Image (cartoon, rainbow, N blue to C red; front, side):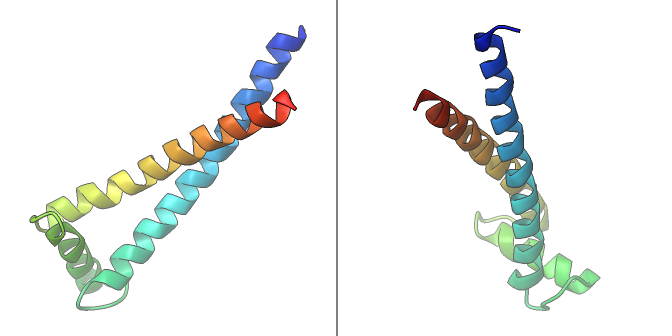
Length: 95
């Protein structure tokens, strides 16, 4: 295996690790936001419903908009941290 090919594998591993951490952090943050946002705090049916409606009301929508926003948060966090992990590995390898 050439050095260039080996570096590519290491770069990909950094991106995968960053994406995994980002997914976990985004999902945990989304659950916490839904549980804490509503008028009924918690993860009961009433708590989830009011939490999603409260999150959706930020953009002028209701519960459906809250679901879309909450679903997009882990994706954005995974993308950002995945790219950050990739750039970190590239920066470390350049030194």
